[in-house]
Image 1 (cartoon, rainbow, N blue to C red):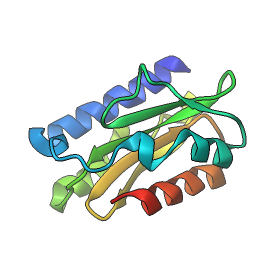
Image 2: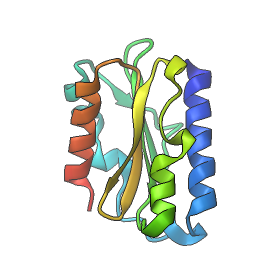
Image 3: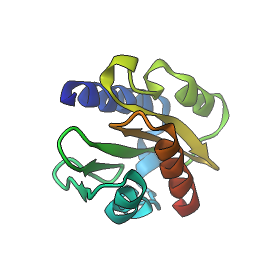
Length: 138
């Protein structure tokens, strides 16, 4: 499971770094761990979760719950536009592999493209997280 998560994160990081300007995060206005707090993640998922501060950074927030649970939220770019933005949303690494035990994908809210993945099969929880993230993005 951890290997699948790592593969997803590395794939998204590779795609995002190859499609966006290097300075895109220099003017970051959205802190992912503040956009989707552990408290809100916990409420939506239905279990107590904390933020993994070792793995989280200025573009990613990782949530830990009981064993075999949790998820991640990553801001891929804060100023998406044109065909490059569309390519990020449609790329092969934009959602977790079917065999990973994760569900998620890449989404757009205005000029922000972000990804979410969770250890779950419940699409309604994923959609609730996406809706909450969209509400909180600047």
